[in-house]
Image (cartoon, rainbow, N blue to C red; front, side, top):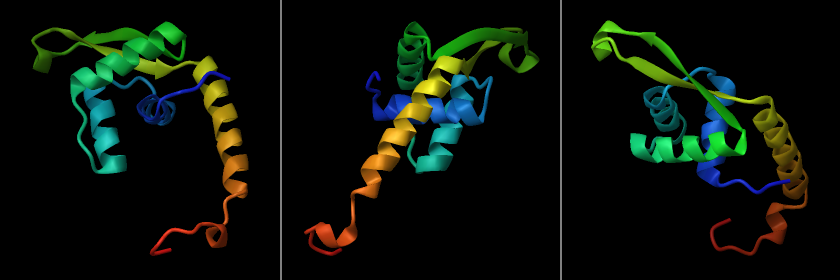
Length: 109
């Protein structure tokens, strides 16, 4: 299984929940989920990287008046992304099963 960065993982989860999203929508969902802002260029970098890996596909939507007749690029997660994320979730779940609070020796727990 290929390793995935945390930003890639979050963006893919957003796309798996909200198919055919543009970068502005992704930024809004990111903010709603994490209460943090992310720049549109940062999202574009991640989307392009994931598109090269085959995890994301994009297409142009219809022209809109609010964009002066320009079309938005819409992104969707692929079946490959879904399968990879399912595997990753299984691995993480197994790893979390071995973590118990008493075994942690951090102050404040």
